[in-house]
Length: 145
Image 1 (cartoon, rainbow, N blue to C red):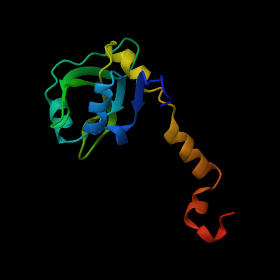
Image 2: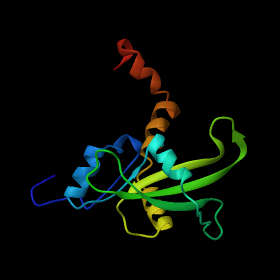
Image 3: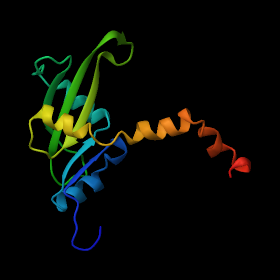
Image 4: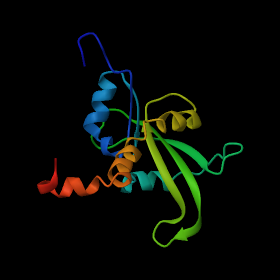
């Protein structure tokens, strides 16, 4: 960051769900939201949830719990979004889960909406590669201009 500037907010996908990054964000007093990996500890935490709330007019449920990893210095919130699958998955069951790790203090639905505005970078990259046939350029170095 340029001298005198600081990051106030950080939101990212699951590639950033790393204890060392979360510790740095906490140390720098940054408000953050990161898509959590659905690893075994997060799945276990989800199974412990007894109360789900369905926001009015929406077709999913949300819940939140306090969570930590073995290497984070502080516990954080896990906000879980649960969507019903019309056709249950053989291995994953009848629900699809999306988890957001965060230190935001907003209501869960507000935190989910804020987190989902992270720029859609994945979709832009996919559109460039697929929509303009750019995927071939990355693999065929002889024909790169």
